[in-house]
Length: 397
Figure 1 (tube, rainbow, N blue to C red):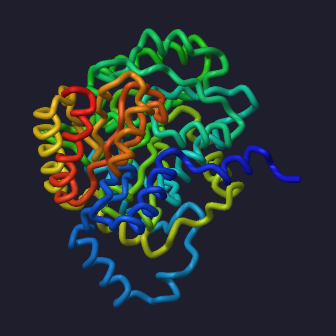
Figure 2 (figure 1 turned 90 degrees about the vertical axis):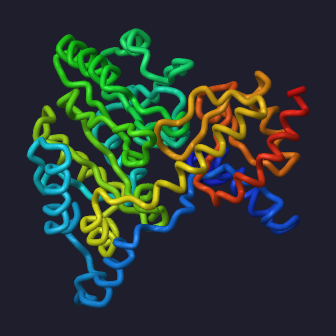
Figure 3 (figure 1 turned 90 degrees about the horizontal axis):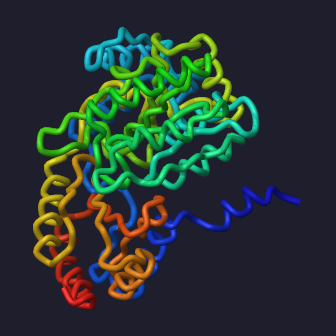
């Protein structure tokens, strides 16, 4: 009567969402101050004041019929011109408005790319663990297959030999996420250079491009002077997906884009295929008001110093309690910790009994780890350290 796949997705939330909803329920039962929820990446830092000022200006000064009306399917042209100019100024490559397709967040951007590139069942996209669990949902929703590579520990950079071993004539693309959710790692220029060289060589062998899909919603959220390398600098056939949810603290407004630059092989087919996928999926058009807001604020961020302080508190506090904090996140607002026992699910269940909500690494394809989302009020971290201490004592730490 209905799609079994869609029914399954509709009746079972992701492990992150399940834990988040459990936290909401427990907060009603015992009080929000007694629940230490580190499950979901929902920014706790307000948008930058410049964004709030621009939002007020747009509402006050714009023609409401234009501001809240339909735009072109791929996004308002003036918005795309402004965004392209910002990207060209920041990263080069001579981007123009017709290289951008505006979307309902990064999820829609990725779905448009996977649908646009998939030609037949059996087409494959390679994903590196640890990975955002919805990637598999997005890829399979396009009728393709997700090929998951195990994590390269302890640094979580890309294992190029392992990648080469799984590339076949069915490989349509390789998906990267840097800064990475959940590991917090930022791929180095050396990693991306090696990746670009490998994909160039394998593309030549196959006689067609293997596309690199770079998912970058955390691009600006980095620490200790880290700079996120611009993936198209290392491989021409890179398609960039982006969201303003994290950088501008606007997760509920759902605004992002697909960038298919002029250097991408077959761009004259790839861009229309992405746009056609958006039409098929019903994503026409991205929210009009926030198209204009994000174009005006491209490159700005919320106050990242708050996340940096949270990261410092966790690194120092958990380290003193016996947790392994030897690989602090270079970017994002996630900490990926080795668990105090091999069974990460059992570890997180023990934490859950203390109302300490942590996501098992198995859900990200990396057993033996747990993800802490530290985009939470700093006071929650300060108070949670006592609970982490109680948990550590259960393991004799």
